[in-house]
Image: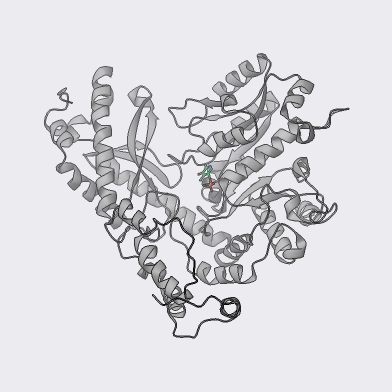
Length: 540
Ligand SMILES: *Cc1c(COP(=O)(O)O)cnc(C)c1O
């Protein structure tokens, strides 16, 4: 490969001069703009190359000594990276929350990188700052629906924040509970507050043994990272076993009271609006009552399901979300924005002051620098992608997309229900469902003796794992798998296929083909064939 010269002159060119119009770089750019999914084949994974094979292309740990031509480097990216990437745009890629994006993002992304604004402070972002604040205001409005005066007062106020834009749901959850923590353990008399004095002093001052956070065991793992980072500790993450997939308010109240009666303080109850595994929505309104009774913060993790609020038809599934002190929403999930777009929204615009930081060279007091209340420092202008999507698709466009996904999930559930060899393991609430292969001979499994149920479930679990892997490796489609407790199997955890329907181009035919493919794989599986013939045989 020809090496580019090592000279400042050459480097200046890299900074200033676009390559000529028929360079590889320019061709790639045109090709990308024309049709990005051309780079990936019709399949979900283009080549059947193992991860170990691919690792060989990325095996050197030395920094390349000499520069490469950009066009040649781009060529190598095509071969090593793009060719082996996962086609998240495929309509048969239905296993995860990452899906196809509208094409306009490709063009707009150039603006983002081209301008390279830093939202940490006004001096490096100017117009992007009010744009981000307006975007947060729109999302706040979607949840809390305050009057015009409220938004006039707070949208651009230097002393308030309607929310915090960040890289994703994880940081949004940490931000929300960081505020909750600093609010609970705030300054009081001579005590300067936890932000200054630290947790040990705060517990001593307030007389708390510990503070804790409660959610169902379906809570996203970012919650356990959150209690870790905030110094609360994973032992104080109260996870409630929930075989119905939803946090039971009665149980939450009982557990919260018991926790507080033994010298602790419950910091927050987390309601989940669309669990990552099954898409269930906790009873938010009742959990808001419980939080009120326990006098604690109420946070709703709507990272995935929050976009349901765009739909007049389905927004009532999230009823009670408007009572949350804070809400997390990921725009990079059901809002079809590229990754790196999360938001924490705050009911009370003053609350963000609990984490406000000032510094001399940036974030001066009274400034509108967003960095004063965000966890992250330097941040790009991703809010523009959300802002643009909200304009280009509009609430009604989003509504159509959300409705379509939910309705397709119900249609898929029905296809599974009427199929003799499949079992729907969780009904969709939103556009997510779980199911598994189960021979017709076992359609009465739930009525069998407990030991038979366990034995058969264990074998079905191995079957599910094996079919899921083979389907993934075949590369035509992708369905994920997870383990969930099922009420009718005495709360036993079973392995299931998990499907997230987000790509508007996925059709019923795609779904029917996916079921057929799974059945064909199963027909060559020993466990499947044994169970089909003799369901209660104990052969392992
Ligand atoms: C995806 C998700 C998160 C984490 O969001 P990231 O953007 O991956 O950091 C948190 N909670 C729920 C419910 C989610 O679905």
